[in-house]
Length: 180
Length: 102
Image (tube, rainbow over all chains, first blue to last red; front, side, top):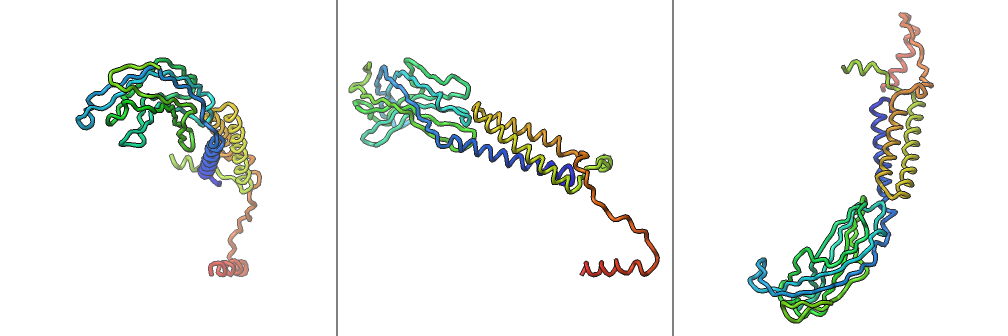
């Protein structure tokens, strides 16, 4: 504390410690918050095809096309420890070979300050809904869930599943379109 | 260049150093509390950081330069003792020195 440099050093060190404590406080104030919100998913149309999957073994695999409506209000999730949300819509189902299959169909990043109300109609999936075999045909329980990663300023990176998922049966035949 | 900087007096006396430390700790803690509450209310952590940085700048201005208020209690040094060639006056300091270095 005798010279300018030693005073600058202790001042800087103290400020950094205080800043670290504040960041931890920011984490603590939001760590135990429930970040689930109700989600409304409605599937308008499902189409099932059987096509060559060139990424895997040369067999024909099931490929589903889903058209869905999605409405959700994400405003309650945002607080001072949220930078952005990563939303993704995933399909979960069981086949003979695997008890749990998860396929991400669609995703979206919502930055802080953007519109938090999503109201989308007739959305097509962003990514191919490929099964690794023929597990989609006549599968009676394919569950669509919207989940999100909360990207914080400080602290853990929670992965939250939205309240409200929809289960739908897939058609029994290929190349047919079914409307719900 | 360096010699110019070295001629600038930067030291504070002991009470001044203590006062400077208390002042910057107080300013930064107060700005931290204000920033935390304000950031929590408007839900922007960025503002908390800005307010703490402002407190940092203010305390830099207030405590880095050796303002006169930090130099009010200078140490009262003993006046320089003129060197006397007499043996009686030199003996006691020597004896003390030897004891200290042992």
